[in-house]
Length: 322
Length: 297
Image (cartoon, rainbow over all chains, first blue to last red):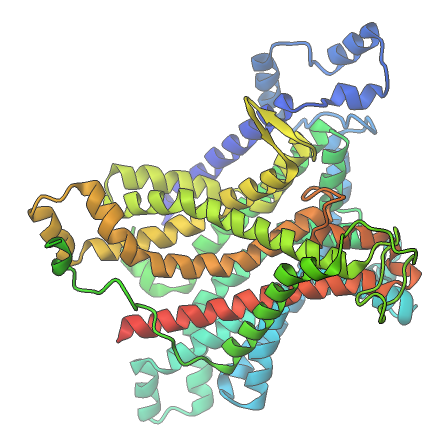
């Protein structure tokens, strides 16, 4: 187990390094560099040279690359080319916003998704089941950014004052307004994932009900509620856990879109802005942060497999699992 | 040829017309509606850039879907946008298949040996990248205009197609590989080897035909994903560039006018995306079920 974790963490570090290298060289190879964006129209050659020197852009690319990795390793992400503030400070402000939004969406939709899936599986072929099945197909097909647009139109135009539909109030400033503000974006962000959770749990619960050990438990006279809770749900939760983990990956792109519609100053809005302005250090930092979150989420999901599924765990210890 | 007689399965009629569920039927109806809009719509609607003289007019007899802030008819734009989004999605999926299927076949045929390992490691690295951020990054860096790579000029539309395709490669290749792994175990593959059929002919001629159905079902499902991904990129202004409409960039334009009461501007194009993705999802699920039932028989 430990060896496996070690190997996976090493793999993660390697992929991150590849991502970083790609990011660095693609940014440098791109037309319309930061200096052009920084200087504006018709800069003098002297001014250009001065700015290039200030950002170290006049050094050989390998030196720049080594410096870039070195700085990163020491936690120095450089300054934003636009606001001239440390990138780490900007990220420090924006990341909590995105994390709060993601956490709210995650908690709400995991609970709703699990409840809907379990209910549908228990009352199979009932009206509730039909509702969940059709509802989840529709829900997972709704583009998050369009749902966000619809919510802004509905709550900003027709039922005003119920919930804020744009902007962000920090929690430290006004906790109540902050929580009210997170409702709509979190709803839009997680709907699709909630639907996938419901579908997966329903399908795997129905699948497990057919298993021999469930028939056996019933034949032994175990009460139906207990069968459901102790056996069916426990086994059905394993595939669902994967889906729940993958949700975090979906949020990485989802927050970019939803934050831009609701005008929320999180990482997602920052990343789009940074790319538009050719703000290299900020763009790199944001890409790095999102890639890391994505990779860590995938790793956690894989490790969860071991925790949740005794069979895989046993197989792994015996050396039979790859 | 003598060879074909060794095959245990017939190549034709693997997919019989199956009994479809109500969900699949409704998916088919939605899909046809979308195709009708995307294929026939642009022919009957006139040009998508013409000014009509009405600014932000509500849907009505004159303008079925209303007009936008530049007085353009939104039915014409939505239909044209649907066509563009569909073409981009299909091209993206097609590009992904062209790369992924050979890779998956080779990996599966050599299951567990070095070509398999090499291909799988590359796929894992590709899959470890968050597709959307990757696309955002590449377009953010190369700009939304044309890019010159050597003698080839890539328009913003081509870039979106390529990016979608690259993002899909790991998924398609995995499906191809796992289907191939199963297929290689079949007796007929050994038989072909014994009689001296070259390796590439076994892979390209015999195994390919048998692994295609599950791969194509996956590809079909991913067209819906591609339509969504394209519209998301275009929505952020990083995909299909105006004046060429796409479902995503119409919605992107609409954000500036949604609080002026022009609900149709942001609601209707989004509904079209919704109809398309539900349609592709349901029909894709139905195809998958039919395939499973077929294999069990």
